[in-house]
Amino acid sequence: MSNIHTVNSIVSNRNRDCLECRLLSGGGLVAAGLYVCHHSKQHQNQMGKVAMYSIASVLVLLGTARILDLPPFQNKFKRS
Image (tube, rainbow, N blue to C red; front, side):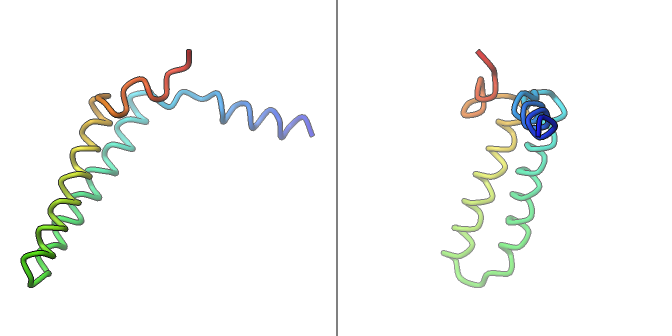
């Protein structure tokens, strides 16, 4: 039973603000934004394209903010 407690404490106490974590999560958001942008070209109507481009731009901006450790991610995972 103490083995499960040890695993939970390791997982909950890990550093989520290391460079590798920021690159992986931010890169995933940027890639998702580029994917949405690429597939928005299949829409025929203008409103569909505008909505898809808006979602894509938000994803790319969030990914960039995560990589550069800017708000809303700044100090989010720091322990006090």
